[in-house]
Image (cartoon, rainbow over all chains, first blue to last red; front, side, top):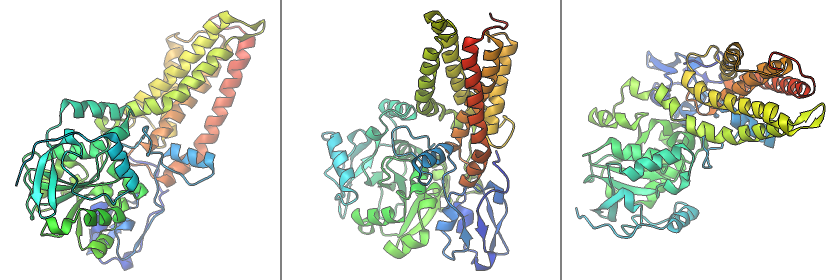
Amino acid sequence: MRYLEKVVSLELDEKLCNGCGLCVAVCPHAVFELENKRAILADRDACMECGACVRNCEQEAIRVRAGTGCASAVLSGMLSGSEPACGCSGDNSKCP
Amino acid sequence: MTKRPRSNSPTCDEHDEQRARGTTAAWPPALGHVDAPRTDGGVHTAVGDIPRVRTSLSARDHFGSVKVRWGIGRMNYSVAPGLYAMGDPSAESPVLVSANYKMSFDRLRSALPRRDAWIMVLDTEGINVWCAAGKGTFGTNEIVRRVQSTALDQIVSHRTLVVPQLGAPGVSAHAVRRSCGFRVVYGPVRAEDLPAFLDAGLKAQPEMRRVRFDLGDRAVLIPVEIVTGGKYALLLAAALLLLGGLSSGGYSLASVWTSGLAGAGLVLGAFLCSAVLGPVLLPWLPGRAFSVKGAVLGLVLIGTLTVSSGLTGSWLHIAAWAFMVPTIASFVVMNFTGASTYTSLSGVLREMRFAVPVQITGAVVGFGLWLTGLFITGGPGT
């Protein structure tokens, strides 16, 4: 299953990469691959902006606007005038 | 290694108190004060007896899972954060990090029968690993605090933590290492792959690192989808039932039972069909945007209903439902983005930018036609 094309905010500065491979390990959608001991964006459109790669890149070579792709969170954020907030804390969590 | 009989089960108050105090509660606790139904005696260590978890799930555990899936009493099933033993772990046994969400903990403990390991349960406020990592409650700080509060460095001789890969959005491996000296190794996405991961010397096959969204994964989300959206659908259905009494001859109870009931039934039917068929048919519904998939589903539903003459009433009402059913379906399936495992925030914002205005238009036009139809009759069913 694929989501919308060419919308994600993921960016990789390949020059800063030290080839540790953690981004490859933490990405749940195989967005990264190692090529000649450098990370590359093999499948950028598969990114779901979870932010795992950014958080684990010691070189700070990756940028993304991390968030939850959740329409009800966006709606409740719009209605309350705040940032999209995932409502997972209650009993009625929609999170998997 | 000593084994002790189980003593009294904990009270809910003790759990709450521990949660309220945050992470400072002393570990290990007096045995039996933690999750007696899920533990079985303890394992002796330098810092005290660590409660041992059962690796087989009881009927009660399974019943609890069903309730959690329906969104009932989720917090009653959260696990007290701290360190647990699985089997007879030694100082060399691996340390597996988990969340205090019932399903996370149950999957982990049942995935590794007859194995010796330590389980470090973080306080994620009863939320699963992935969502908690997104919020940061499953995160670097909580790991470091929990390593310290459980005196993990005195229990194990190695300095490695196996953290579920889906915890990575909240965890900085390098920051954990700097703060407490423990190296983070990311384990597989699914607990069922842990035996293979451990046997391979903490190495995950690429397949174990991929999140899937198979039919089964989607189907288990349907109940909570129905529970969360259901109350709004019921409110809307009740409103249409009452408004259905309006007619050119004043308020009529007879018309409540015809137009009103038909309206309420269609709203609930459209909601239930979308909440069930949306997740089930997700990969096969055309379009990438969930709102588009939902709209297509709604058009098929209303088309089928019209062609099969299941829809009676005035032309205006048929036209009204041709707008309202796809709108409801589009909205319901769009909200499934939050439960899906592959939608990005940027993508959701992009699709909402066109979908929400279209949905509002569809709802207003549909509702306007329906209201008008209450006063002007004429059509196949009249």
